[in-house]
Length: 419
Image (cartoon, rainbow, N blue to C red; front, side, top):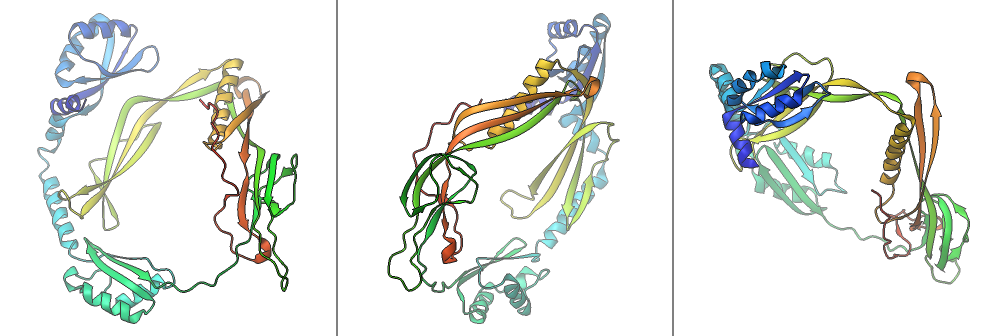
């Protein structure tokens, strides 16, 4: 596969668009002549696009009269075409050499300062101290004394237990670790609360004061089992709540599909524009072409290293726009209903956690509108059984709420088929 792509790039290829009444006859004739058609795509009954080698283009044109087809070149790709474009562009290479020289010169300065590991000490205080020591954006890297800055930071901030200053390319990184301050011990008191709304089908309180029972409907955040906390001045131990709480949970999603709609299809034509990002400026690469009447654009960012293993590179953005056309799509009532159910079901199942068992699925279908505005709307409901009990610091203690965690770990269920 990689070898075929390399050969195609070195020899050059063309993306062509073929129009005709009998496209199958054209394809058979091309195969008899040894013309390899790659990436063949049909766009309707009388139009197809394909990629061919440059050497096969003349053979392809000889087949057009017999097959009553017309061919049009959409785009050209490959090394021969790239070399022909840049052969006479001396200013391009001169500009590229100048840009590399400027980047190399700018790489001898510190342009970014990053501070990590600080919690109690503010980042602004560390940056201000470094600036007072002469370390700021724009300073030459040869003027930065890393060891001296580390010693001065430890002296200026007694809270720092360890600090490391490193120069990486144009980045000055200050990583530090702070001394741990003793934290006052706090008693643990946790309630079991509902992570989601649902109908409780299984409830086993193991510790604490239960506030619900099986068959109750609960809301997300509602306390299900309360921790036992002695009143101030009373003797006794704190008992955190524990329980097994399983409930029916419902996930809903909706989708609508028109009976008369349009479908967007790419024709195969595309235009590409590149940008080189230097010092906050976006410099266009190449000559932008005229835009399409209707298109879809994709943006891709990449960092080009000046040499292998270099920490210095250039950020580029490549924007590719593909020409599209709209085709009318006419669906029957049954086809629109099936498509709406498929879309709504996919959206509803996307909300269900992977380890949760799906016990029931329901779809409510409604039709509205007439003529061009007729559409099918589906409300899809997925029912599951989940363990909704999670631990949360009791409100009576005024403790900070920790990350929610299951009240009782249960064995994972086998999820239902969601395809």
